[in-house]
Image 1 (cartoon, rainbow, N blue to C red):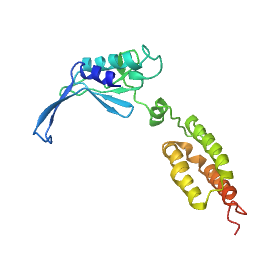
Image 2 (image 1 turned 30 degrees about the horizontal axis):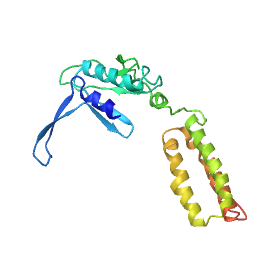
Image 3 (image 1 turned 60 degrees about the vertical axis):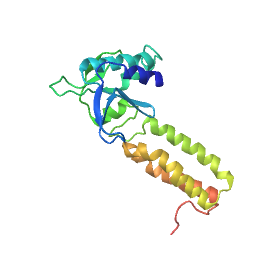
Image 4 (image 1 turned 180 degrees about the vertical axis):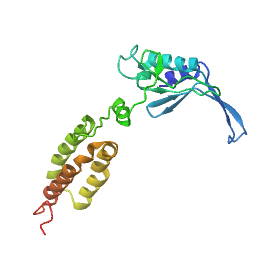
Length: 199
């Protein structure tokens, strides 16, 4: 990533900003690319600049490098201009920006590998989380955990692992199944007579 960022910073048409809150007073900074954990934000002031960013990105992570669906193929590329400019472009993965298609939010999530829909199905990403939860529930049951430990696992581990997926899709339909899983696990761990209220 360091080499990729160095290459991006030496690319065409970077953005120059004034950093007014610098300890040594206002200073001009040049920005071509920023890194957020494993996501890069590439910035340019011209159309040619963003094409250059796409070319560099694909050299390292696109089809010409790893052969996977990484690099600019999965990136929304924008450039800053004080004048009229053509439509925002989405890179085609080969270093050539193309006009962006306006799509429904569900299509945007599908582009990220998160499947949505109005029908009642579990998207692929949620299915993997569900299978992992079941495996973990089977492993937790015979360990003889106390109530406090079980509550921590459910509230701070399991629920958080599915919260994001259920918030952005129709996966909210798995809530009853999760409730049943949590109740049955609690019954096995805490040796309760029932997994639901009887009155």
